Image 1 (cartoon, rainbow, N blue to C red):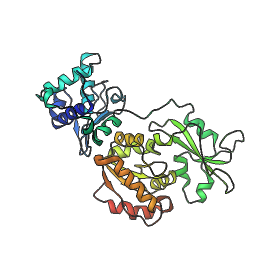
Image 2 (cartoon, one colour):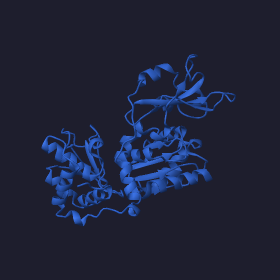
Image 3 (cartoon, rainbow, N blue to C red):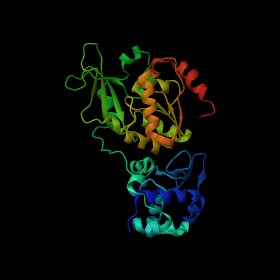
Image 4 (tube, rainbow, N blue to C red):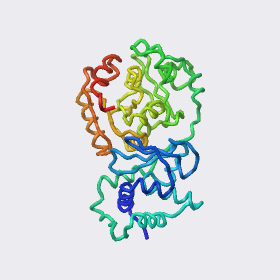
Length: 346
């Protein structure tokens, strides 16, 4: 018997309602946080008490989970149904089928398959589409260049951005510097390296250092900005700790947020949130999004697009700011206009 996404979604939702019983069934001792439960991963083993997380708050599709050390969810899917399938497979010593996992779920829930109806084609809604999105991960390739090699190839920190008011230690943290090697595509450009969430180098953006240099922004060959969140490599621990992610548009906005002490900030490389970026936000453990896109008309449209894209998966806050964008503000302004107005949220 085949099971549809809608049936799996319904089973996952029912399993979530009995999450404590489910964890006891698999002899899992866990720590209960306000937005998640954490425990050693039962799929690959180990004793790291924070290795595995099931999110318990703020999600339309309840019970999404992550194995932070071995990423076992990539093999079994991020739904709670996938977690059960992974745990059963670990107990059996071999990967069990979807059919076997479904039979276990039905028995555990004391339900019959007739009680879980498959959706008709015209009933497939945004929740099902979101489930399909979260069943996959953004594509990642092995880094061809190490971070050390990047750092050694450019002059860090960038004097250009120091002149624009950024602190040298911030630019050093993000490896921002000038390429002065004539045989390189980014020669005479300010290089902003891009790392994925695992700190693997995946490309760079070169900013023109003079007004007559074209184009103003040059992307390295093959870099797909929609597949990444800028700064997630540095933000992920703070996002998981607080359950809050600050969303800004550009790299300079992320730097300024760090200078203001807000480390859980990520950039979307523009004004549109992509499917892959949504997946990364979900995987990060964020329950609330603080949307700090530009304060002009385009920034307002961007904020609406982000909220529509994410649906009911997160709580949203959009504090007004006095400047056009975060990068134009001082760290004192950010602390006053953003942090102070979010007391009780974080």
